[in-house]
Every structure is written in C-alpha cells, then in structure tokens.
Image (cartoon, rainbow, N blue to C red; front, side, top):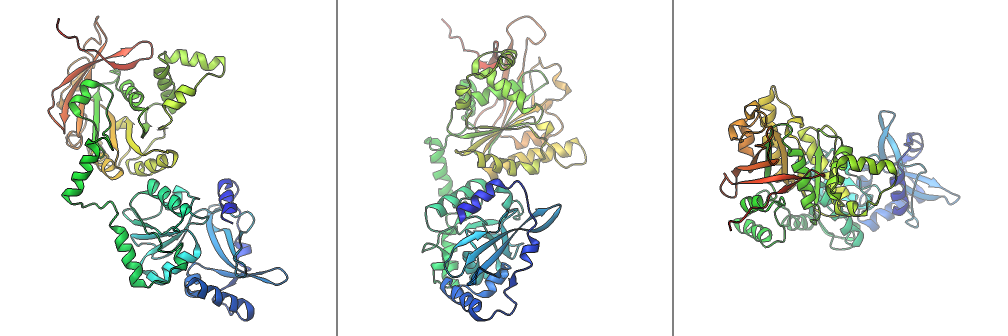
Length: 498
C-alpha cells in the first residue's frame, strides 16, 4: 500500500476535494455496534492503542463489499481552490490488514495531532504508531504522521513546525525506517532518532515511564547547543585530521594565511563594481567543485543561466561568447561539466534573510553529499527588515553569522565597497565597508580586492589583501589575474629570487 501512496505522492498534479466522500463515513464517536465494533476493539487490543487515540486522528469507519469488510479510514488534508479540505483518504482493512487509498488522493501536508504549539514533535511512519505515542504522552507533545511511509518525504510538510522545535524521529526499526529517519535528519535538522525496541511502537508493550527513558537516552545523541569542552576538542580533531576539512579557496597564498573557512564561519570578499569579485566567486566554485561536499550559489544579481554560462566557460577554458556560439550550433558534450559540478546548486530568486534556512533545506534534499559552503552574490541584494540601509545591513551581517553556525556551513559572500574606494584601483581598507561596522564585526574573514592597473597600461592584476583573519594575522596579500579567454581568476606565481 505504501508503494501505491508513494506513487500517488509523486504524481500530485491534480488535487481533488474528497470531503463529500469523507462525510459519508461513520465517526468513531457515533454508535458502533455488532461486528464493526468487535473488530475495532480487537484491533485496538492487538496494537496496544485506544479508540480515543484513533479519534484524535479523526479516524472513521467504512463498510465495503458484501461481507461487508470493515475499514478504518484516516483523512489527509490539502489546499483545494484556496481552502483547506480533505484531499486524501487512507483505508486499513480491520480483517486482513490490507491498506489502500481513495482514488485521487493527494497529500498536501502531514497530519499532526496533540499540541501543535509544542517544541517537541514526534514523527511517525503510520497512524497506529502515532496512536501509541499519543496514548503514552497525550496532549503534551505534537505527533506528526507521515502519510505515505518512511521514505516518502516532502520538505514542505515540515515548514509549519515552530522554529527551534526538536523532531523525534520514531520511524520503524528496520532498513526503510532508518533510511527515512536519516533523510529527514539531513534535510530538516535538530532531530533525534528514537528507534523502537521492537520493529514498531505498536509491537512494543512498554509504559509511559519506559518510553520517556528511551527518549531521554536518545537525546544524548542530539547536537546540543551547549557542549562540553572535550566535545569541542573532538570536533577540532575531526577537522584538523581531515575528517571534515575546512573549505579552502584554491589559492595557495590565501589558504596558507586563512587556514580554511570552517563550519559556522563567514568570509567576505569586498570590492568596487567591475573589479571582478563575481568572477572570483565563480573561480572559487570551480576550484572546490571536485570536493566531496555540496555548494550552493545564491545568485541574487545575475540570472542562473548567466552564472551557468560563466561556469561552463571557466570549466572549458573558453570565453562566454564561445559557449553561446557552441550552444547555437547544437548539442554539446557536457559530461565533464556535469560531472565536475554534480554537487553544485544555484538559486537565482530574490531572497529574504529569513528564507535562507529553507533554501539550505531544499538544497540538501537535492544533494547526495553534505552541504558545506554557501556563496552569496552579493550581500547588498539580500533582503532584510530595517528602517534604513544601516539597520538592514546590520541585520544581514548578524544573520549570516547565525545562519552559518546553525546550518553548519561556511559562507562566502561578495560585498560592495562605498564610494571612498573610488574607481576600484586603490588599495582597500576597512573604512571603505558600506553601510555598517557590524559587517566587519560579524565576518570571520575579510578580503579587500582592487585592480591597481585598472585604468593604466600594465598587467591586469587583482590584488587581494587580508583585512581580517579570525585564525591569524591580517595584512597578507596576494596577486590574482584573469585567465584568458575564460576570465577564471587564478593566482599569479610568486617569482623566486635567482
């Protein structure tokens, strides 16, 4: 039955209003007698649940066939023509356990019972497990029922969970349950795996106190906000030993100075317009694309198609106009490009600061590797609340640092300098940061970029100075140049004295 539901979930094109069907079914609080009542009582005993728990899920009775067969029915809700209604009905035969769904069922969101405002959300594979946990914890927590088994999953089902809530993943103790719980944990975050001692919670005969003890033990594996120094020391060992390397830019001179951008850190690349900071971002994306982790580009200024064209040009070592000409002539060999950027995602939509956790979650759902680095081009186009530019920029500065820590990613963000930087040919200083000193405070690393020969003859060099370095001294500088014709930003080799 779950295979059928998963297939329905994949279709999800046309939503039907099934309220008229649902209203013909018999509520559990109505008078149920005879064989249906006996079968319902027997089912509850076999699963260790109560009829009150079934009623909390709005379960109803349906009789079908000549027997007739007795089915438990559970509603699924969604939006139809702008209003919330029953858009799915799941059935369970109380005689043989067979499951099926009403034709045309679509699941707009997962069903939640209990205390919706709780910060403890227990996620279950099915209705009977949800009943079992409801009987154990009552109205104290929220209990979410996945509508189509362990592996069927939509990120939007979790969007209305209160911020800061902990998700207790109570999936079955089998391969599918473990895989489903891991999938939710990768995408949603702040989760605790609560594995049933037996295959599922309906088979487990434990008490409320025993269940709470299992949950408390499982919480020991949660990534707590407060950790002992020894825990941080172990995480430091993981990073320094290479188990979770910091993100390196691919420029030896800079990487030696900065020693990599770790999870939770923010690097700002500041320059005037047309100095080449977006080309530098694209080049860093190319440098680290082969790493076994995911990267997300937020192209707030440039359309995603243009970013892809630049990345393609860098990959093939040709100009963007050459890429355009190639595309016009017909299909191209793109295997190398697709292979190199298989862990790279791009979003070119206008975004608010508070949307970024959801964008990270969407990206994780697409990746098969961990998301480790987020590129933003550029900071001035990220939307945030504030009465003026200073307040908005301050909010963004603090918000990016918080996002990096909460999402456990490195953030690399391009920034515009103020007019004191002139035409982009003069040396960059911290005083040239636009709008807010909070930006300087919230960044772990700041790079200032300028092109000293911008308006003169001589080599076209982008000079990069380390203005702030959380891991060491500032002041170091390197020279980069533009590889022709692709415009990839590469490091100028340092000549050794003869």
